[in-house]
Image (cartoon, rainbow over all chains, first blue to last red; front, side, top):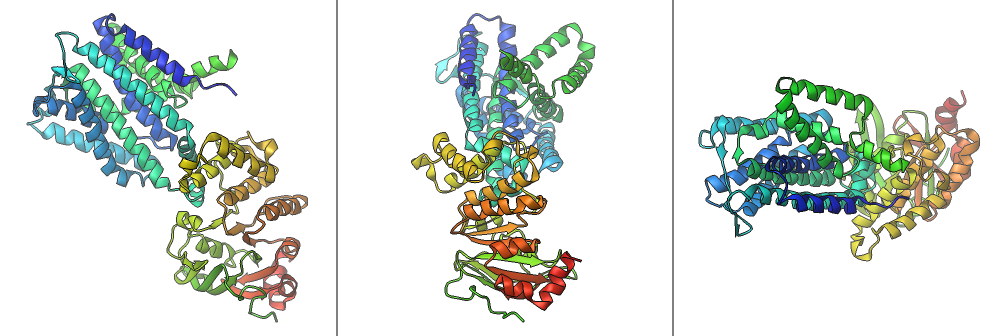
Length: 312
Length: 260
């Protein structure tokens, strides 16, 4: 039996990331904040994938979290970053709790398409709503974080630190959950729902709980991304955004809670580099990466780490 | 002619009672006015040709199918309108003709899932029955009892059929049922393995009321204390094995086909 080092590694990496917060260049802070925010959304997706479900609509919760945070600031006059993040989580979780009642009854392509449909409904509403800025969206800004006023220029670094701590908390919680009876039960549901029911457990309850948790993580990621960018627009709920989350989940693999963050980091870095050096072939680069991955690393980037571990 | 009255089933306080149960699929009658009372701790063999209604009966008792009419009770509690999950929670569990396992999980993890579900249902958090140590001990006992120790880390999807059958029954017993229904526990298993599997299963199920579907009359004769013979959705004979197996109608409709 190998010892489980994941919590330790997670804490160590987050400590390094936090230590870098005051000194890292601005562009890196921004890139890492976005990577962590998207990693959180993908972590929720990984949770769902344990029960065998792939959502092509996590953009719904990413967008809800972003708009909830932005509306508080731009319309509600609440200018505290932490309150905006909490609002993003609460709104996304509440909507997930309602939609989950329906979605947790569907499987496979039906689940995937219904989740996509709900995200596109929100996209449609946002695009049509002139009070919410229509396709242009609107700006937001935070003047304080947890009651502490933000000096000029440090906002981005504070949001980055918040993203690191959120990733640490969520990563540890999900890791613990997946290692518990309920994590194993999720895999059991993916394998054979009939047997789970005949053992006396409710399949619906487990799928529903995972769906709501994934929604909350999506809202958290959306609020963090909105704060970092300082702007929200309907693109956050568009299907290409949801597709990107699935892409990153496949890129990382579902073997470990570190994988979504690793993959999100690689994804954001590749995109930034490609935008800079080869803006016209960015989509093609992405396609080639995906093709190579499925051919040579079907279990995702994480299998490289796992393989190295196995040989040492 | 075998007496319709059960040898030991109609006595005081039966644990499982089916009354006037009917079920049809379109024009096919799978259950026609079934009336069965099973005494606690009895071992009942269900025999009949394919399509005679044995599995339909098990499916109706365990909530997979709803009877068109009639009622099924366990220990006085109505099972008829309940979902499989609720039926299991009331103490009735089952195995399947095609074993229903978690194929990507190891044998031990399969049993851990089952043990965990039972502990969670009993709100055992406070008693730490869900702690890895306790759950592990309960699981290892189950592995031992079913002789599955040597397969413990093998994924269930890669097991020989006989081992899959055993694991399927072991899963059904983890929930500590009072009534256990086994759908062809020895089908797909070589003839010389059959008795060994039944010995293990019956040993593990001691004190539990067992109903099992079986096509091998040697197995039925050896393990059942009472036999229900099904034909065209009806129970055509009900009694002690020797009497039922000697019955002319049973020989024509059930055994005759098997040995044709």
